[in-house]
Image 1 (cartoon, rainbow, N blue to C red):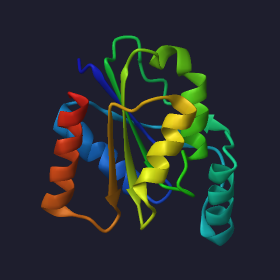
Image 2 (image 1 turned 30 degrees about the vertical axis):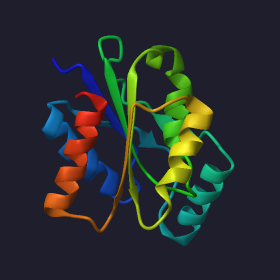
Image 3 (image 1 turned 90 degrees about the vertical axis):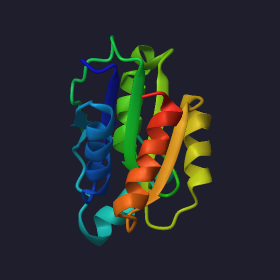
Length: 157
C-alpha cells in the first residue's frame, strides 16, 4: 500500500492525465474529486474563473480516499484565475484536520497563467507546499515526464 494519495480535479481531462501519470510513477492510484457544477462551454469557463477568483467552495462528490496512513498528499488541478479551483477548495476545507502534518504537493495544468500566483494563492489559504509544479497543457512526452519525476523527488515520493 502506497503512503501517497493523489486527488485531482479536471475540467477537460488534462489534470486527470497528469494525476494518472504521476500515480504510475509513484505507485499510487489517482482519485477524482467529482465536480457537481456545470463547467462546459463559454459560460462554464467563465463561471469557473469567477468562482476560483472569489475563493468559492462548490458542491463535490468526495472520492473517499483513505488519508489516515498517507504521509504525502498530491493535489492536481487546472489553473483557473491563478487560484485554487473551487472543487479542490471544497475538498481541502472538508479534510483540513486529516491533512495536518502531511507533506502536500500541488501539480497544476495551465495554458499560460503565471504559476507563482497559484502557489501563493494556495499557501496563503492552506499553508506551505512541500512541492509544486505547473505544467503547460501542451507539454508532452519526455519533458512532462521529467517534470513529474522532479516533482515526485521534491515531495519525497
